Image (cartoon, rainbow, N blue to C red):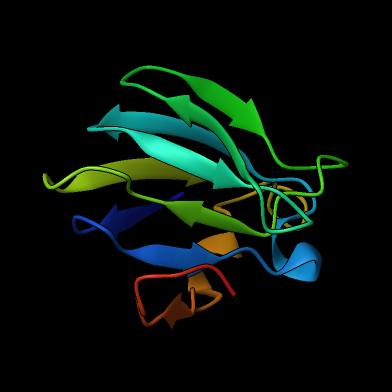
Length: 99
């Protein structure tokens, strides 16, 4: 399990190969899903859970000023602790527009 911290206005790219079985839960603030075509998706509030598999989501964004947090759970390789949290999450600079 890992935690993604998004400062106000921050954006984190979703790399499909690393997130294919990921389930996220917003634990603080609000998070907006950025869709495959760059259009803004739904804004999820605290305690909202979401799957990323098959959704076409390409990024997570914090639309507010306050820091948001998302807990991400991915299945591990067999019995024992999950090693999924060892994959780095690339944070894309916020240029004020969509990419």
